[in-house]
Image (cartoon, rainbow, N blue to C red; front, side, top):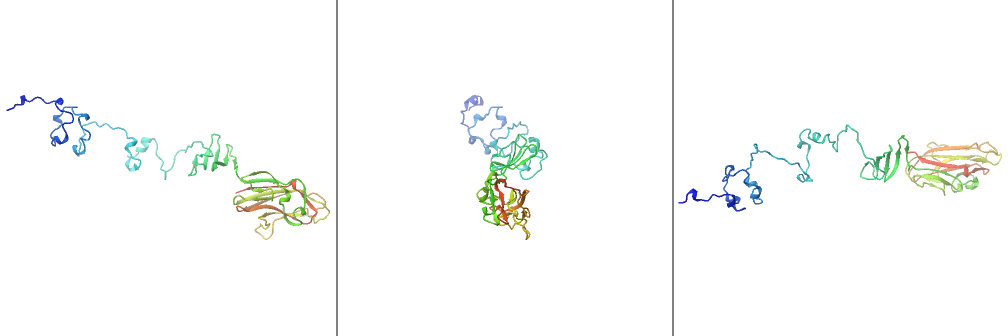
Length: 315
């Protein structure tokens, strides 16, 4: 009969790597007393040999040192959301150094600092990337639409609107009588004036060919004009009226009386002292404003080169 001393001592060199598998050991057959410290390393196990089934459902690590590693991007999926109730009170403030502002609510206690922008890429914008508000390093505040500045406030608080509709035009020098416009009565100062635009902004809305300003957008407009008129004879009836017209109609007053003015009534064989008239008129987009004169006789004449017709969008 074999005795204990007749068996050769079994050490790690007597076990071929990978020959003992989980199925070779009964549950609880090997405990910590049978394993020398540091004798079992990861290299002694085939891949997948130690899984959930080989571990007790409860692990006692009370006397062990647990080493943690930082959470990296791969630990949290793109679809995962960490709700506020998953964080300890004050966790966000402590770790970030400030209280995060909710995208849907909240109140800022400090200033909102933005980087400088441009007309094509404003600092504050919506879904349209080239429309919004931005600042520049020269203390300017600017508003842009479709990549173009539409309002500029400089460091002195002056406001400019580069594309605000405005124009000024004058006639071609020369004396014109009533018959130049078609005879006595109410006549539009149209093509006979041979208008020449000296400047125009916010689009080409004034027509030199017919002397009409067509509104590019609905709104209130301010118009003005000045005259140079002469009575050829001693007739007291060689006067004229001035009237603004909308779409060819001089009836633009809310009352039954039209607010026209009279020039050279009772004056004979002399120049008018001069006249300058203004009008605030509401125009729908596509409507036009033009100047009408009433010629009582064919004796009076006006000088086209000294007449100016101007206007702008008020709002």
